[in-house]
Image (cartoon, rainbow, N blue to C red; front, side, top):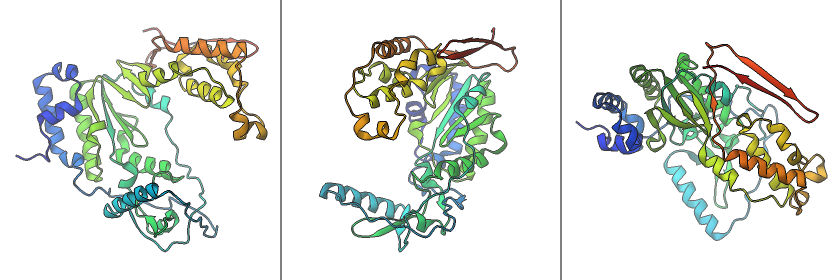
Length: 368
């Protein structure tokens, strides 16, 4: 029997680290493979992939008249790269030739995006996870013909417009989020969640996870989505998701992200100092007294128009003693095993607070 060029070795190499693959039962392997065979079309990149949904009013411009920007001049090499990409997109049906007068202003869509830690909070009881990655997710979503002229762009030779949801369009993220949320339907916040094209399925037991996985793949298959098999993680007990590592109700920052911060050289411009503190701030939940420690580095954040200028941000600086101490202290903290327990809604909470002249801090605690 043919299974869309997917076989047992392919599943092993793409879905399982060797340790996890060898530590699950043969019966469990077969159960997972049966589900993947059943929805093999999801992973077949030879098939056209446009889902059974079209984005409407994705580019709302109100009564604003069409605007147009001439294409920038490019080098011969860049022009050839541009032509090759245009040819590829034309063959895939992602763009089409256009006579549109548009290069549009945009009115923001208000569909809410889920907050990362709201997602993590729902994983406290989970032991098995699957993460799903869409193959060029935006390009799988058809664009309403009346919105297509507003995506127009020009090259030296021709004028084109997108037939699908383009990457980088202002309302692209909320539009895509809405479609995925509608496909997941009632499973959202029960055993599936999505942050744009990063979908996670979570379950307490393996058998439960098989049921959940089958349900979500069935929904995506019905919608005609295409998945990137190389970036999917199937039925694992530890995963990397949204910049974090999750395992047994514990959550850590992604090791690669932390390594990049630890290897950061001492800032020599205000822009570099601000970039470091903002990147570190993403992990502030893992760093006790973060606001107090980082305060000396915040002095380099631009507050006036003059300070925000490129020239000012690139001007060489020497960190103050306090700022240098903060920089080194944050890097040292990042070398520790930063770990938090995902809150258990069934256990009581205790909050501990502290304050000083430069910071207010709080810790939410539980006894397990």
